[in-house]
Length: 343
Image (cartoon, rainbow, N blue to C red; front, side, top):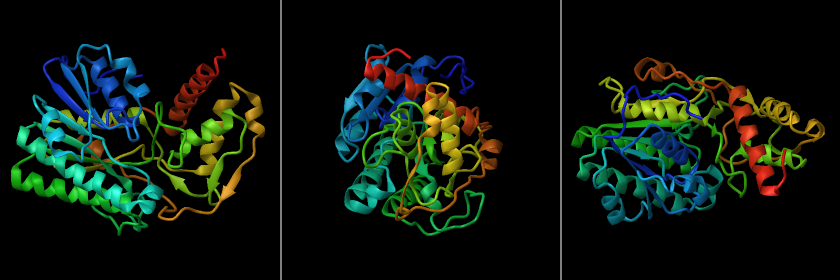
């Protein structure tokens, strides 16, 4: 992955970065990119509630990598990890709409109180810029398609409320304290290192793992739900471009971070099956299992990426189909390694 740089700077050795939630799916992909392109320091803060040691273990011996085990709900920890940091990627959060419905208190504590701790610590440390993970869930009950950044609806879950509050806090801090903050509304990101197990696992790794094991994937609803699925390398690109953009019009803005394509769950399964069948043709014959639609889910989602294209010069490098091929190959190789078999 990442065979070319997105930052436009020849040497990152003079810069130090903090990645909160750096042991998570998106965070660890950002860490990989930064180290590959010579970052002077990459510090990760993670409490491993949803992140995994395996995601960052390959970086432990890198001389420019540092791991701090801690929680963004701890104010002192947030201030400590900001020392000597130029740029912050704030990825730490408690994701999942169903989890937020079951436990809104913890979601609020992590996603709002934790976000505020990071924001204040970044302000006090004088960091140059912070890019934070916002969410497409902020669009709520708005039925407009494609989703444009300035038209949102009412939140449909506690999780959506917390991510919207992040945007409000960022806007206030940028105006009151002169901070440079950019929020990226992620749309259904997928790719290597995304956990396939657990009650709150994302749909694509769950589909892939089920099919590899010749088990029927579970679909909530009739499969007509559509999403703007976005390969993780596209997300790394837009994060890096947000950190280093010199366009003043892009700073203190919200951007959709997406592919700009929409497919249904049934179409998605078709892509996955086709890719996996190259490894095992039996997968084509695996059926599906249907369950009721989940509370808080929206029917359709599609992002307009025009604003990011114009101000950040963002260009998705991977289509959904290309991303699925990359993800399937990664998960299949991992499954073979876990089973101790050679493909």
